[in-house]
Every structure is written in C-alpha cells, then in structure tokens.
Image (cartoon, rainbow, N blue to C red; front, side, top):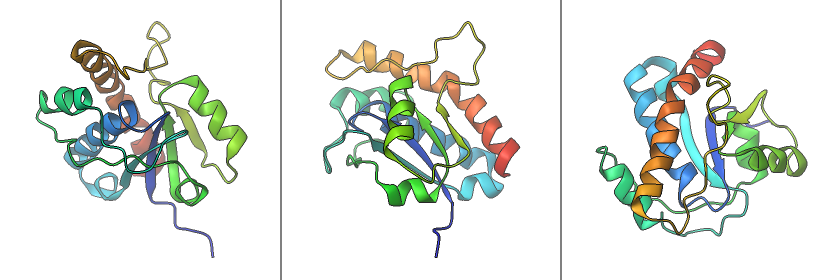
Length: 160
C-alpha cells in the first residue's frame, strides 16, 4: 500500500545548517496559516547526512535571534520512505535537486529549490554556511526567510 503523502521535505547536504533552519522557519510560517497547511508534517534531511548530528551551533544561534528553537535537531539522511510521503521537496541548491532526481524514484510533482519562485534577479541557491561565522549563518537564515512566502504560496496553490 503506498504511503500517504503528507510531508514537506527540506533538503540540503549534511542536514545540520540550511535544511534544519528552513524546516523550523517553514513550520512556524505554516502554523500561522492554519488549516490544512498547518497539518502538514515538515521535515528536513540531508543528501549526505550522517544520522544523529546536532544542528551547527551557529544555526541554533541564528534561529534563536528570531525567536525559534533548533537546539533539539538531529540530522537525518534522506531515504526513499521519506520521499514516498512527500507532497513537495525543496532543496537548498541546484545540486540537491540533481541528486534527488538521480537517486530517488516516486518523487512528488513539486521538487524545486526553496528560492525557485523568487524574482529572476534573486539568487536561487542558498550558500552553505557550514563552518562559517555567525554572520554567514544569519545571511543563510535571511535567505531562507526571504523564500518562505513564495513556498507558502506554492503550497497553498497546490495543497490547501
């Protein structure tokens, strides 16, 4: 029996910086929307993640500065079972989308970069802040925040 598609999956490389921040930010935005969107399961995973790693200290700090908690995050590698439950998958960079398409079957209709719907003048990839200073993590967070309204609109259009 096929899995029920009830997840939005945010994907990056190691699942300790970008996708966990995007997960928490999107979950907060959808909670404010209410209705069906607030009932979606929002998860993050990494194309090359090692299971059980904590979020980067600076990722935790960057989200704390906007009132959100990432301190209990544990990294998770992306697997086919998660893909099978996804109604949408948002990657942080073009390489993540390429990896999804080459490694997984049964992808949902929506597989795109998180910033895909922004105006063409905006950069599409979210740079990896791994190992960087707090300012780099805050810039990453802000890049995700800028994309959240377009992601919410995409989910509303297709699934609400």
